[in-house]
Amino acid sequence: MVESGVSVLVYSMTIIVGGLCKKGEVKRARELVVEMSERGIKPNIVSHNTLIEAYVKKGDFNEADKILSLIDDEGITRNAVTYTILIGGLSGLGRVEKAEKLFEEMSERGVEVDVHVYTSIIDASCRVGNMKQAFALFDECVDRGIDPNAHTYDALTNGLCKSGQVKAAKILLNEMQSNGIDANSVIFNTLIYGYCKKGLLDEALKLQVVMEKKRLKLDVFAYNTIATGLCKSN
Image (cartoon, rainbow, N blue to C red):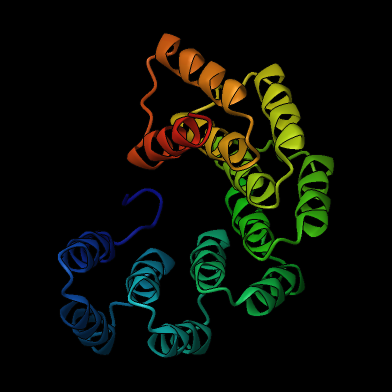
């Protein structure tokens, strides 16, 4: 740390801020950051991101914006993690337009985009059923040489199944596996829900068998969905 110019005190503060936020003591964590700043020990972007994430999880974007203003005032550069937290939080609340503006802001500020940011903004589009935009972003991600991960496919699969495009979701699953990414239980459970919703119970049961072979667990919602489908088909 010394060789890389990282202050031991700053590093220690980062750990403490993270611990306090994890315990839900966000106010104490923020007071610590303010106190240390007044003593001339400026926190790094990691500490600020931790505070922003804590506020976003509480749905308190007003306080998160205050931290962002503080970052800018202190000349600290926002990074991809900062935007991933904000975009993910906004998409979860359905505030997609705001999330999209932040995504555009990244390019304006010269912040390098990574797979986590792309996954967050893709998920935002999927949540409002804008699958055309979601796949445009997916293609853009690939074209930029950024490899999608399982979470990226999770978001797309969920969006397709919710919009009734189960066949497209199955094709996406095959594409994902051909790219060397193993499907997780979330994707399989989502597909099962999609098949049952379309009345394709046999396909859902086939996926259940595949999951058992892969030792993946069905969640309660998937079990209920299959049970409902079985009851409807007598």
